[in-house]
Image (cartoon, rainbow, N blue to C red; front, top):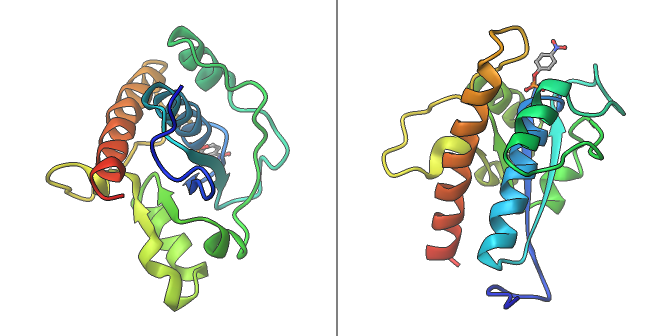
Length: 163
Ligand code: 4NP
């Protein structure tokens, strides 16, 4: 497959939620599938602002919802955001405003520009959250995956239009 952006230095994107077991591993899996389909050279990782689930696989409900969409995220393991992440990633994308606020408080001032909401790249951004499905209804995971699928395409549209 043709790789469209610079093969020597892939863009590096970190997607972040609270626990790194529901939303951000799902976002990572969806982004990776879309990146591959578009033939882009972008490296994606995910992390949580909290350490509760460090080392754990994604929540089964995220695994199952992504499997329905042909994406396997079972091998991912949760980790907490580290200060080095703000240096080593080009974009650090928060799932919700609480994650964003926590990330900004950890991030050195000079690097804060790379810390954004994942929803900031849609046509008319309105600070929308990817809702946390952890304690919610079963269909929260389908809603989360639909939302992430839309945000992933719009983020990659932005990246392709602003190389
Ligand atoms: P996530 O969801 O931030 O999308 O991974 C959560 C996972 C675990 C918890 C909260 C949210 N928790 O409280 O353990």
